[in-house]
Image (cartoon, rainbow, N blue to C red; front, side, top):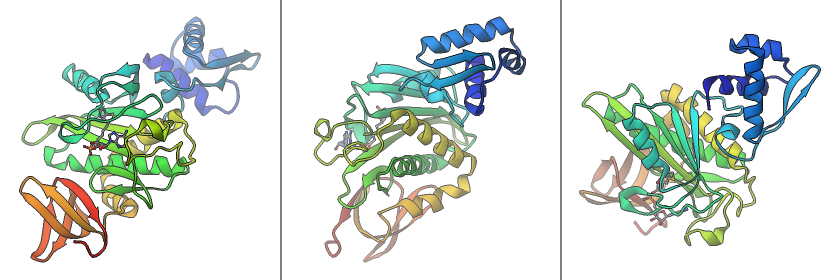
Length: 312
Ligand code: BT5
């Protein structure tokens, strides 16, 4: 979407009464004819924009798509939407190579969705598949914090949708209780020694998906009786992620608040072997502190399994 169209949408979404053509033209620094052309383009994109004597007002927004997600989005990201992609992370990586930043790639479905360690991510229509591309002015070692921030953002969006979600270290969002998986996060980046050059945080959440279309240990917002509104869900994830990006000190406390791993017996598969014990804390930039029989171990990365109490 062009910047002007985005600003027009922002102006209309912020107003609780119709906004006149001359006011919009003035605010956007374009002619009234240009305002009218942008309104027409938004109508073509599925917006129902009423025009009366008092001006323009949005009566309804399309269900999903770039303009739908950008409408009312309180975060400075452009949205690129595709009905279907192999992987939104792959597309975001291509955009990164072209120098793009602050863009969210969203797909209606994925044909080659990726998890960590070359695992597949089932991506049927109805899920929210979004990759946030940004260039934070931080060293590569701080990147795990962004994964934690994304997990917090997704968990909050699930809870707002009425589903009691919790985080399993480092990046799984699960249903509280039986711990079936609602969402996963795949973070990829390129960096120099002291600075990230680009970062892609890929988020897959089962929102408006039938549980029968998902792996056995998975569930969806819809299947758990939540509000399966992809547009709102995607917007809330982007906004919450952006708010945490702006306030890095808030990430670890928020993560601890939402985590189900702390206090649990865990086994973490790491490249250096398994670490088994009680998960006692998370530490900057996102490491898990595990109390083992041989003392505390700080685990930076790995697959974490929650063990039943007593089986550690
Ligand atoms: C993840 O990997 O959980 C990261 C998933 C990231 C997916 C997003 S979608 C947007 C962006 N574009 C991409 O191509 N990827 C990102 P991991 O922790 O490795 O978990 C993968 C495992 O989760 C699989 O081996 C399955 O067991 C399970 N799984 C696969 N699809 C699932 C789904 N839709 N819901 C729940 N669990 C699933």
